Each structure stands twice: as C-alpha cells, then as structure tokens.
Length: 254
Image (tube, rainbow, N blue to C red):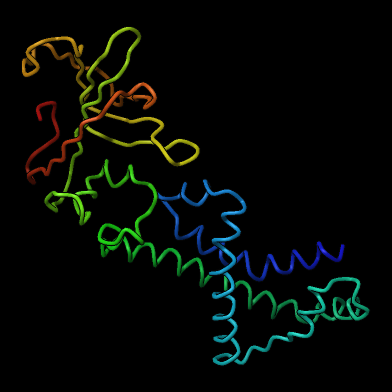
C-alpha cells in the first residue's frame, strides 16, 4: 500500500503532465508516434519534460497567482500510510480539493494547448522539414505528400503539391500488375513504422509484362470511387507530384 500510494502520487505529479503534452503534440497524421512506444520508452520520454512542466507551472502559480504548495504534506503523501501523520494529512486534503483541482486542471489545459500549438508552429514554419531533429517519425507522410522535397539533403524544388500520382507494382496471384492512380489516403501499420495500405482513385491497371509501356491500349480503367492496395503485396512504388492550374481538374491523363 505504501509503495502504491507513493507511486500513484509521483505518477500524477511527474508522468501525467508529460503524457498530456505528448498526446496533443502527436496528433493527426503523426498520432501513431504516441501510441507505438513501449511503456518504458513513454515513461522515459515523459518524466523529464513532465518534471520541467510541473516546476514551471508551480513557479507561475506561486509567483504570479500566489498559489502555495505545502511540500511537507506532499512528502507525507508520497511516503504513504507508514508515516504516522499520513491519516491526519490525508483527511485534511478534503478542504483543499478545489485548490488541488484548479492547480492540476490548469496545468493539464496549458500542456494540451502547448503541445498542440508547438506542433502547429513547427508544421506551419516547416521546421520539421528543415531540421531532422524536429522531424516526426512518420516518414511516409513526408514522402507521399511530397514534403520530402524540402529536406536539405534531397534534391528537389519546393512547390505547392495538389496531387500525388502513384504507380505501384503489385503481386496479384501469379501475375505482376501495375496500378496507377491518384493518392487519396494511406494507413500505417499498427506499429506505426510502415505502410499498411494505399487508397487510390482514378485507377488504371496493366500487366507489367505488356510491352510498349507508353501505349495506352495496354491500360484498363478500374471502376469505383476508391481502390485499396495492401502494401504487403507491393513490390515498389513510383511517385509523381503535380500542381494543378486553378481551372484544371483531376482526370485519368497524367
């Protein structure tokens, strides 16, 4: 019991703040980066920033608002029931419930806003493309959306990309088929480290063994709104990035 109460108190104080920041920093297309870590990795990546956040919030609340933290009471709670003063201190907390809630809720709201805003700022200023240290681990997003063209070590021209056109060589039974279409979406694997499947539209296909690759007669349109390709069946992928004119629409001819 002693260990449990102390561990829970420390967890709420120094781990939860880091978890909240990480959860709102890794959102949308980068959300799996939050979930794919092991519990130990999450612990290590949360305790250091969590401690910094806790100290920063304490300084702000004490110096600016005048909020006072009784560190002696906190130490007794961490020490647990074995401390002779624990029961008295624990009962006395009922008069401080509102203040404790205000302190923690304000900390959590601030960290949620900080994480979300920091990620938005990095993305808006393209700092993750310029500096590898700030880059998210979903490398497929940078490749499929053409953002990798802005990487310092990759030759390419920065431009507004409206369409990513995909040529995927896929194993279909005993045949090898080339599927070509406009990328609509993608899904990462559960581990978040690789592609699970691609979602294409305006899809055409042809057998890779057909000759005269530039001959449109070898291509067949695939009816339907979306075409899903499991990435485990893909041999390789070629990507082309396009910028459309204001009066131009997507069609089968690229």
